[in-house]
Length: 73
Image (cartoon, rainbow, N blue to C red; front, side):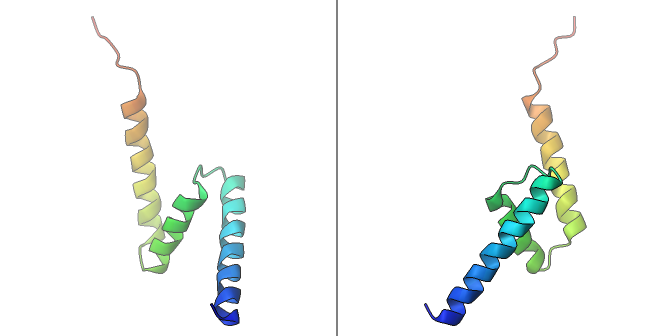
């Protein structure tokens, strides 16, 4: 790995660390891997607002699936 590549990798890691810190302050509940995936998707052209909406919908669905079944009598 060249020095330039190593510098680029270090800068990318520092950026991800900073984004993760901001994410934690905003209580997004995203782990570093998920955050990195989201950043990569946005860098590839995914609309950030649409991505946020999908994440919110997935969380709602997961919460619904994790709720105990309510028995109606």
